[in-house]
Amino acid sequence: MAQPQAATKTKYDVSIIRPEVRAEQFHLRGEGYPPARLAAIRKGLRTLHTLELMAQTIYRFQITREPSDLNCQLITAMCNEMGHYQDFQIKLYEYGFRPSILRAAYWGVGFAFGFGSRLLGTKAMLKTGIWVESKAVHHYAQLLETIEWDDETRRVIEKDQADEDGHVARWKRLLEAAAPVPAKA
Ligand SMILES: [Fe+2]
Ligand SMILES: [Fe+2]
Image 1 (cartoon, rainbow, N blue to C red):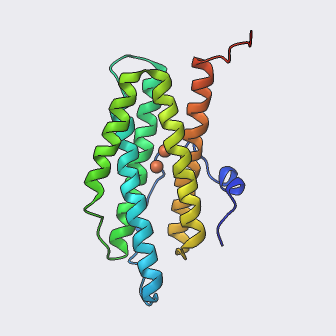
Image 2 (image 1 turned 45 degrees about the vertical axis):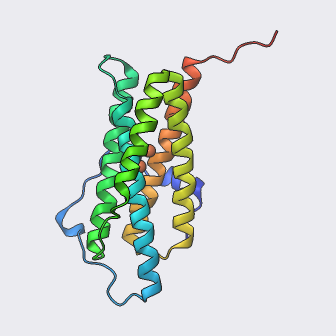
């Protein structure tokens, strides 16, 4: 069964940006699984892999050369998403699947969101991050609930979901700091 989201938030340390992966943690997966279970896992992994390409591309194109705290946070988030992208690429190949060729289109979407929001300024960047990451948390929850994952893959997905939730919280904090709520006249 899927972990409730509140449990996911406390169970994983989101200050670990790139968790260690040891040689013995790689396995070939899926042997003996019914075709319907495999098909669901393949669809889920391809979706996650594709979305993580979009996420890392958004942050990549939001980063500027300015030596600011925001840029440091964006680089941290980009690294986090690069790790997620690796996570799902590894799982795809462990299952004998291949990534979706359609993911190139999501690179384009990530570029549009990332570069577009950068042109509009800090608040637009933070709002874009909050919107995309909130969608991601919801999407992750759906995939955790509806797909019968193996335990190790499920833990990876839960950790990555907790990271996305951490991103929402971080961008919300920065947005509040950037835009104090004005007193009503
Ligand atoms: Fe991610
Ligand atoms: Fe994220």
